[in-house]
Amino acid sequence: MEQIQHKFVTVRGLKFHIAELGNGSIVVLFLHGFPEIWYSWRHQMIAVANAGFRTLAPDYRGYGLSDIPSEPEKATFVDIVTDLVAILDHLGVTKVFVVAKGFGARPAYLLTLLHPDRVSGIITLGVPHVPLEPQKRGESLPEGFYISRWSEPGRAEADFGRFDAKTVVRNIYILFSRSEIPIAAENQEIMDLVDPSIPLPPWFTEEDLATYGALYEKSGFKTALQVPYRSFAEDFGIADPIVKVPALLIMGCKDYVFKFHGMEEYIKFGKAKELVPNLDVIYLPEGTHFVQEQSPELVNELILDFLQGHV
Image 1 (spheres, rainbow, N blue to C red):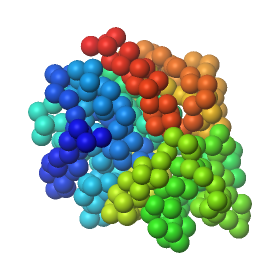
Image 2 (cartoon, one colour; image 1 turned 60 degrees about the vertical axis):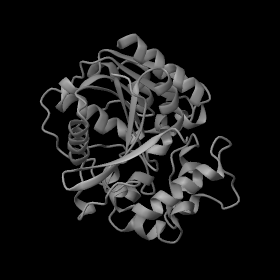
Image 3 (tube, helix red, strand yellow; image 1 turned 90 degrees about the horizontal axis):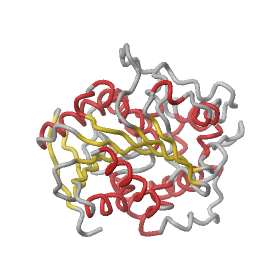
Image 4 (cartoon, helix red, strand yellow; image 1 turned 180 degrees about the vertical axis):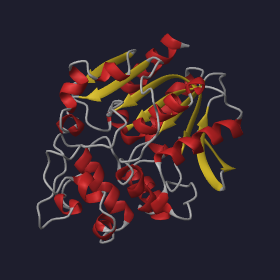
């Protein structure tokens, strides 16, 4: 990990942290999910840089070591995309391959649709490109569905506030590593779904947890709750949602995302290709929601195969 370099750039009035490795002419931009930061790409950055690419992994506004906006409750997905373009401009990078995890799929595909000249190809892990209308993921799920709970202003803040940041991250990693959607009972909060005696996943070390915990202790969760969980109704004004670039979706077969309403059919029976005609889908039989950390060597190989096939 020591070889990964860290820099800060100031754009749009905020200072952004960027992890960087490699000096190739072709740039790969890694976009994290939640509860992650740049560190979730530590294995991939090294492998991709060693293959001759330049890798960049920013922390979004309000995440990790990047500045928290003055009004985090007003942050949007469009802010994230505009930040990314400003960062690339600042670094003199004109075009990238994008690799995104979890909710990072949304800014990744928005970047591709809003700035098609900036993206050569896109890989997402755990989440496909879905219609850009307001999301209805919880329409068939009970009130305790975690996205419904976290989209309610103040609810998650009170839940998370009972613990330190490290414990919150620990609990979410355990919950999101399961094959079932986190759903709390009426008299429970989401954090109550994890017994303190349950161990971390075997591929996630105490050192990893300490790294995440320290960074979320610094940033807090306010911006992270706003984007993504309170921004799914955002209107992007995109008339043509069809993605033209080559794309790859990597899904763990044990990823709880498959349990979202209609998601398994959407991915497995061709609906996802209506929006992304040049999409390939690869399934990892034992994969969970964190495949890039759970099976780094396999995911690295898949990413490199895609990149080398489209340069």
